Picture 1 (cartoon, rainbow, N blue to C red):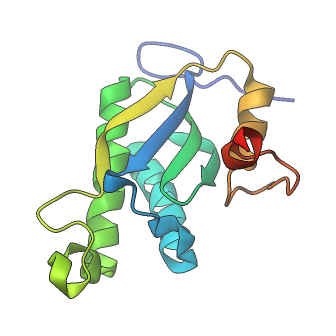
Picture 2 (tube, rainbow, N blue to C red):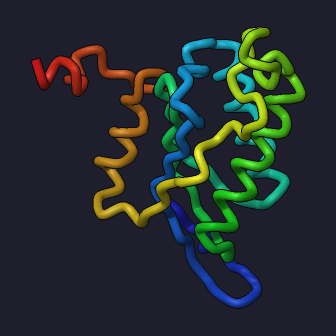
Length: 153
């Protein structure tokens, strides 16, 4: 059980949000295990740098879900910090992604993340945690989870 309440300069408590960032042009880059694992490391580094907590992280092929405590930051600040940090470092490690299209690049003259994002206070924490863990590349992937394709057919 939690015993210590987080304290900030002007408030006490936590502000947990369910977040989702989508890859620009919906390229399925997270099907690549090396990119996915490195991106997970980058989210951890960004959280340390900006003193943000992420308790859950789950990847699908072209987006990432997270449960993040935004602390004193606004939602746009959190999105900008996390997306900016991860994109810069991913492009540095995988420069082929920024190459022109005819050379196999995916994001020529573009950023990594779609400019839109989702950050919302969860209504049911247990359901959100389960949802994040059951993403395609989540930590608790339920192999029997119904996908949209299976549901629609």
